[in-house]
Image (cartoon, rainbow, N blue to C red; front, side, top):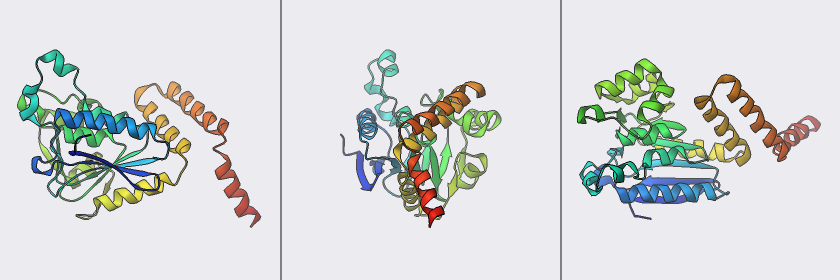
Length: 252
């Protein structure tokens, strides 16, 4: 794994994935994309990890997207098509993910953030989808996830203008779930991750699966899937934690 991607366990049940290329605003190279895929596999395979914090190193950026200077390393369009799509690797993480945002979160950096489950932002955060200004669109879920997060009109506005938005605007539009003070975003993300990791993996992963199903199917089909997930959690005995806790309080 390249030093530009750091994957560590920071607390019981909590891991942290750091985009560590601050001199380039944490822009993603092909090598970093492969390392993100490796980290995603390690996270999914490690049963002790129940929540993940995603952050960028340095003070100026969460992630400025793809390192455009490295696009020429792809030999042709087919090679580029079959690249590791680093943003969608975050969507493939099975555990709950929390993005701690500061500074630039644009292009592929925005796509990383919106492929995570929860976003916490510092006042310095600047989000945007500037690809239209370069003659293309984002290929890592930009149009798909933004539309699901903020709705048709706001997604159109963001993707068609290529404008940059500050943290307050991002919060009002629904891209960001929580605003915190400058420099507090990582601690807030870690605190939330620890709260999530305090629940069982069966509970949190089935919740994530159920909510993701709402994005992909009809209400009736997704509702049936949600019920099946609950039945699975019960079949695995996961409900005992809540029942036993309730019973002990009642008896006490």
